[in-house]
Picture 1 (cartoon, rainbow, N blue to C red):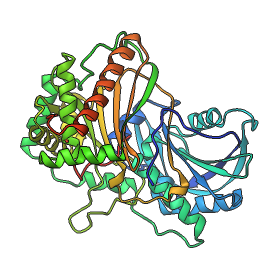
Picture 2 (picture 1 turned 180 degrees about the horizontal axis):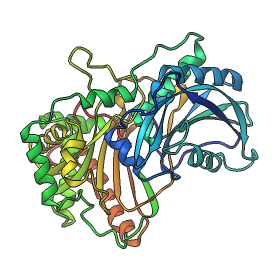
Picture 3 (picture 1 turned 120 degrees about the horizontal axis):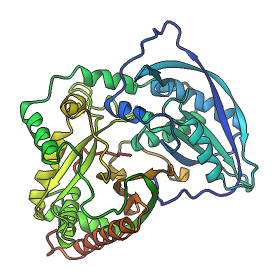
Length: 446
């Protein structure tokens, strides 16, 4: 079972209880901490704020809150990432290990208010970059005797893959009383990246071209978003593009074209841009960084953290094989630590109107969750000045989720772009004469 993607969480009424943990400094831990990752540093630089979290909701057996707390304790002990916090160190943020020493259940809300609203308030306050810790376990007790667990974390400590890992581990801890084996932490991953050799000259030259072409800015959505001089209330749309049979047909078309599913989809995106007189496709393209060393390629597969790096996807052709080459170029561009590559431009700029395209094929993740758990991705409500498009593939089909600023121009232009993309993908899935492709290395992004 994979994460469900909806515009807003579907959660029945009920009383919310939140496990409020207590923490202490790790014995023997120095005061300096460790360097955060490139993305953690950018995330923390925006400061404490609501809406910086991600969460996952899933069904749990009505076992009592004491047992839930004990299961959560073992999950926290398994993941060093859940025992780390970001702290201010002058102008910089540092990662410090902590010990979660206990906690208590606290009633949240009145049991009548919408639990989604209650949880949003809890996570906005607790799951922020400098929370200590910046995660919370909550449970919603429904009137029919069923229970829903919701785990929220500040984005600095998680990505979509990690959410499924937490669901799987929490259910395993509820089923068995044994301690869960520890896994490498995200802080170890950050240190491992620091030890990598510099990126090849070819990659540096390509990043230089990408940045200088746009005067040091990131790619932006190619149509007007209206007045985005300041972030606007978000609009989120989820389009059910294809059912499972439709995705299978699309995969057949891609195979006949000699590509995977993602390059075929890129072909559609490029065609839509042409049809809307929006130029070539150019977007920030997140890819995962969970590739382990040659002797342990799955080293980070069971870890929790923000295992994401950013690349740029550029394509001006609708030929699937050309699109496949563009995807491979983007993956290569994101295969090296970004901080030294983007240092000449002061890091990754926060460009108003920034456009990002994410590809998440949940079917290919090495994380299995029982279907009875009905895992559901929960997004925070934010204000934004950019456009994010997520293509999400589950066992039930393909979904396109788009988030953009709520201006009239953005509603019109992004909405039309998304509808045309969905229509194009459906057309290709039903007519293999239309030339309009996923790479097994691509994994979820937030």
